Amino acid sequence: MNVLSHPRITSFIGGQPVSPGGRDAFENIDPATGEVVSTVEVATAEDVDHAVSAARAALSGPWGKLTLDQRARALHAIADGIEARFDDFLRAEMLDTGKPVNLASHLDIPRGAANFRAFAETLKHAPGEFFPMVAPDGGDALNYTLRGPRGVIGVICPWNLPFLLMTWKVAPALACGNTVVVKPSEETPSTAALLGEVMREAGIPDGVYNVVQGFGPGSAGQYLTEHQGIDGITFTGETRTGEAIMRAAAKGVRPVSFELGGKNAGIVFADCDMEKALEQTARAVFMNAGQVCLQTERLYVERPIFDAFVEGLAERARALKPGDPFDKATSFGPVISAEHKDKITGYYDVAARHGANVVTGGGLYAMDGRLAGGNWVEPTIWTGLDDADTVLREEIFGPCVHIAPFDDEDEAITRANDSEFGLASMLWTQDLSRAHRVGARLQSGITWVNCWFLRDLRTAFGGMKHSGIGREGGVHGLEFYTELRNICIKL
Ligand code: NAD
Ligand code: 6OD
Image (tube, rainbow, N blue to C red):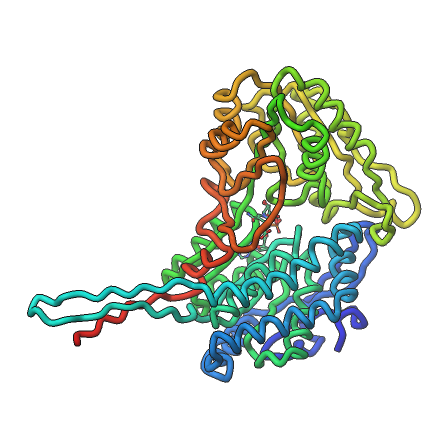
């Protein structure tokens, strides 16, 4: 059954969507309009148990017997399946998130397919070890490593780039021979359900890919993370949720891989290419209505260009076009939910109360017609707050940035690093030596120089400090997605 023609979305277990009926359900709301697009049935603890059992059984079925090359071909077949149903994924993602079509069709859905292709190839280049040695009796011995799948991986996903971030974890998990139970965000259930259909069409054995729908605490998320049949948990979401999941993972000492929150800083030096810096900073702040973990919420601009930069960014914010996400002219979408809208505008109120200079925005768009029911937060720029202000310390995850002037390189680095988070940073300068010097001192898992969100999927991705544990991407995810074993043979 096609999830798009079926407004009741259920979990996907053992190669089949769960038959609808008999479970608690909630409405999936289109953030652009506030209209109900589907109803989602919440997985029970028993459903989660079935999903984990199906995933465990699949490990010792045909899936577990595939060679690396065969698994790589299976991953390419999944990517082919996503591409063949591109428009279905696009529509599902847009109705779940309200993303403008230009963004979802250029970023989210293509990256879903690209994730499977990238990890299909990556594993072929995984390094191994081989150590010949002399034993105490003078005889020879050989050590070498074997990599095997970790087992059943629990994949817990957020709502901001739902398909991109889910496939970013499912693809390496499967490439390494694991099976998965995915818990998509309650805000964005559709693409995970659709991917179940693609898995079947691509001939992936039953039980390799399972989805349990529902919420976090007291629901499918908690049941999954506490389930002792889960061998490892990979999670993307808020730092506080990560802490709860880590507590759940402690029972049974299961490993975790975490991509968490951020409060990312950007530094703009006076020698930057101003046009490019403004264009990319506008992306870094306002793309996906600011709901990207890599988004810049704190910007430090060298004093000689401070006024011009603030005004240039404000012009770009004012030029953004909110509107029907399906209209190609729309460049700015709603935020995910009424609750998230209230959280963001709560910070807008705090900023105003604390005396921020509101350069642009600071409130809600007044939208007409059907869009009046959506969550339309204005892109917002502030200046004038202290670095210690709540607005500069806590992750807002909205289309907003505070811009402060700085006078020298050391000061900019110190202020950028003054955060409990350390996910991403951005640096604009045409001085190559400075780019290396500053890049090396910034405390973040990734630093973009003269660009933003430029991704090579072979690179290590993850956060320092409270922004994460471990690195995924390329061969770096092997540490989490595989068990490395040493074999020592006395010859
Ligand atoms: P969230 O932490 O609220 O939820 C993420 C997922 O965890 C959802 O599926 C939710 O149902 C589930 N969950 C919540 N509580 C749980 C619990 N106790 N046990 C098990 N599962 C639970 O995050 P969100 O609001 O969906 O996403 C936004 C956050 O994600 C932001 O903080 C953002 O920075 C972060 N994020 C980080 C990255 C990264 O790569 N570092 C990427 C995207 C988003
Ligand atoms: O590009 C990626 O691989 C990635 N994990 C991006 C995360 C974006 C956060 O919202």
